[in-house]
Image (cartoon, rainbow, N blue to C red; front, side):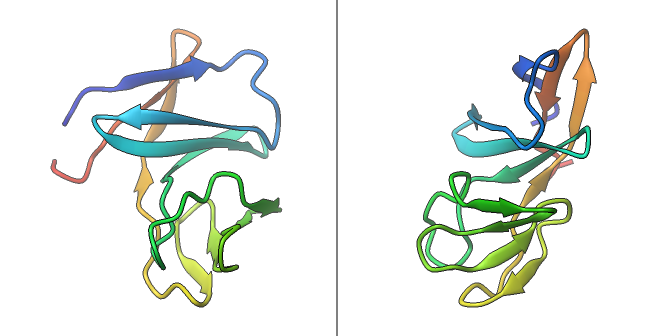
Length: 106
C-alpha cells in the first residue's frame, strides 16, 4: 500500500492526544507528542490487545492489559511481557491533514 490515508485534521489536535483509525484493515493509533505525530499499530505484541488507551508517560506507552511498555517514537519494546517491537508507520501533515501510510510492503 503506497497511498497516504487521511486520519484527522492536524489543527487543534491536542498534545498527548491520540486517534485510532483503520489503515487498510489495520488499526493504527496516531499520537501527538512534543508537537510531532507518531503512528503505531494499535495491537500489543504480547497478546494483540489494543494499546492506544494505555498510559502515556513522556515518550513511552504502557499496555493497559498486562503492562508491557514501548517507545512511542520507535516502537521498541522497553519492558516485558512483550518481547517484539510495535510496528510504526510513516506520518506526515499534508494540506492540514494528518496522513499515515503502510510502508511495510514498499
